[in-house]
Image 1 (tube, rainbow, N blue to C red):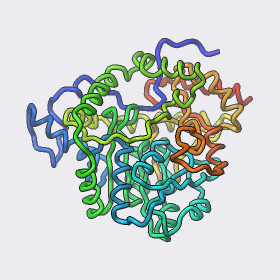
Image 2 (image 1 turned 180 degrees about the horizontal axis):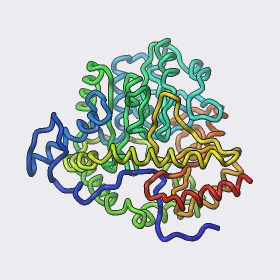
Image 3 (image 1 turned 60 degrees about the vertical axis):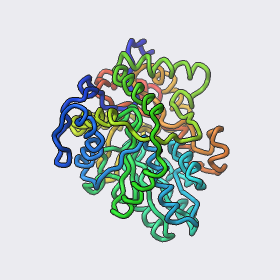
Image 4 (image 1 turned 90 degrees about the vertical axis):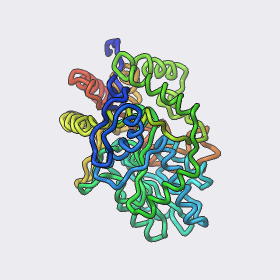
Length: 423
């Protein structure tokens, strides 16, 4: 039995904010950001955050939005205006429910694609069968920082005249063939939500390779995204709370205790936060939150290097445990590592491991509870469908947080439980 802990480790490796990030002091230098002081410095944060991350990733200009889901919604809206007769969007059957919610809010239809057996990638044969002349876009997902097979989606999309939108919400900093993810498809987006590598509590970065498409995305956002002082004030207060509580002791209050309450009432969906509203809020991100993000972004490359090195040290230990499959990247890719994503041999042993680890404060969790057709609240959004590989992935997967706060002793305790369960 694991000892009761007085602090809580996060399920993802988020970049902690510092007190100085919250102040309007000097912004990180960048060629496109003029030196400034006071209120002018804070205003420069509007350009600084997106410009600095684009410079770090080596991408074309990035467009800042209020969430990764809002970024997807804007992208779908823009593409549908360009191709109004196409109404279907093909998404993996195991992904964040917000993806399906964004498709519906854009006035489009969800088409599910089952996964490859034992993997998060969409099955190529199922993907080809799901796409036709009505397909507007295919959305491959870089799940948990692992790099997805975008080439398969591109091949099918080109054959039917559809677009590819890379869901890189969990993969900021991941690369394929030496380039940032998000650049193989037509559009990509990243999330800056709580617990992500870089966070302004809620935010998103939208990316397009082609200048004409970037211009279309910017014009669509300018038209459909309103200003909302109330929503931005709420997000600013939430960001202050995040800055204060995203620490091992604060996370017990903000994350661990609500998790255990949800599990006690038999609500795993609530425990992992999969219970989303069916409307994606849209509003413009305020200058202060953008400036906070710009300050923190200066530390992002070193932070990503640190957690990548930590993951690479720990992966061999997990692979020595018989019965565990550790999800990794293709040979030409270098993913980001917010957590380690595992598959156990069956649901019974996965659940046995979670019975000891999920509430132990060690950062072990589940990614999404169900395949998309199995969320009751998505019944009007997602069509019922036989997706056995997605259901199997949901039943056998668990995650181990890769925060620097997860010590070697913590990690070895997790491995000991996994070994005992699989013995």
